[in-house]
Length: 418
Image (cartoon, rainbow, N blue to C red; front, side, top):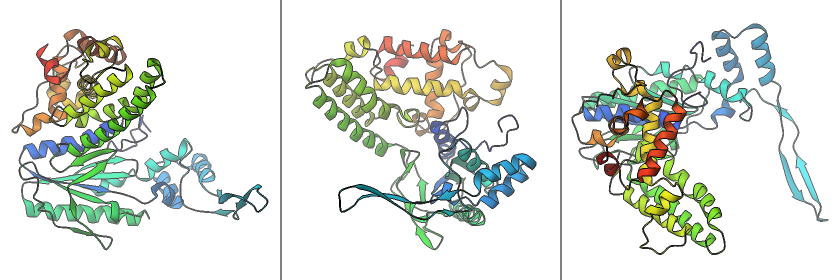
C-alpha cells in the first residue's frame, strides 16, 4: 500500500510515520492560515457509531476488488472476514457459591472487521479510503473513523451554504456505505479570533437532529476552542497534573526517590507532552502547568514550597515544561520539513543541512502563537551543528541534551540564548 500510495494522504491512523499530532497539525494549520488571511472558517467534527463493527463486509470486498485485489488474495480475505461466530459469555455465582458461565448460542454476522488483528485496521482504512473524494476543495482529516473538515470563505453567507453542502455530502457517503453517524456527538466550531463570543453559523439539521455550533470540542484528546487559545486544554492538563502531584505526595511518605521518579514519568510527563507542539506555546495559562510540574519535582525530592527546582531538573535530567514543548516542536518540524518549507526551498536546498527555513508571511499576532510559525522560529534557533545532523535519532538526542543542559524556564529564555 505504501509503495503504490493507495491510502489517502488525509488518513493519519495506522499509517507509518504519522501520528495524532500530524493529524491535528493538518487540520489546524489550514484553519490558522485562513483566519490569518481574514477568511471565515468553520470546523466540523463527525462521530461514527461503532464504525469497525458496522463495516458491511460485502461492500468492503467490492472495494477491495476495485483496488485490484482479486483472485486468491480476495478469496483469502473473504475467508478471513466471513463465517465468524459470535457469542456472549456472562460469568456468575450460582446458589452453591460456585463460579459458572452462561453463554448464548453462536451466531454469525456479515458486518464488522476484527479490531484485535493486524489485518482488521488495514481493511478498515481501505473501506473508508474513498471518503475524502466526496468533499471537494476542503481540508479533510481522517484519523481512523474520526472525520473532521474545515471550510473557509471570504463571504459568510457562502460559508453557510458550503458548510451545509459538505455536511450533506458526508452524510450521504455514510449512508451509502451503511455507517451510522452519531449526530449527538457531531460538533461544529465557528472559528473567530476577532469576536470569540459571536456565533454566526446557524444550527444544522443532520439525520433529523439539530447540531448547534459549540465553543469547544475534543479532537484526538485535545480540547480545541473556537479562538484557538487552547485554554480548556491547559485547564484539563492542570487537573490531571494536580491529581498526579497529590499521588506523588502520598507516595513520598514511604517511597524512595527512584520510585517517585518512575511515578513522575507515568503520572505527570505524558500529560505535559501529548500534543504539546499544538497547544503548548507560552501564554498566561501554560505558566500554571510549569508551576504544577515544579510542585511535582518538590514532592519527588521532598522539598518545601519555595525551594528552587533548577538544580533538580538538571541533576536528574528532567525536562522543564518549556523544554518539553521546544523538544516536541522542533522534532515535529524536523520530521515534516516539507510542510514548513516553500516549494522553492524544497527543490533548491537540502533541508537536512544548516539552511534555515523561511519564516512564513503573516498578517496577525494570532498567527505567531501556533506551530506553523513558532515551529519554524524554534527550529531556526537551533545551533547549525544540530540542524545539519543527518540522523533523526542523533538530532533528537542532541536537542534533548542541549535542553537538559540549558534547563530553560521559558521559551523566551531559550530564544534569547541563541
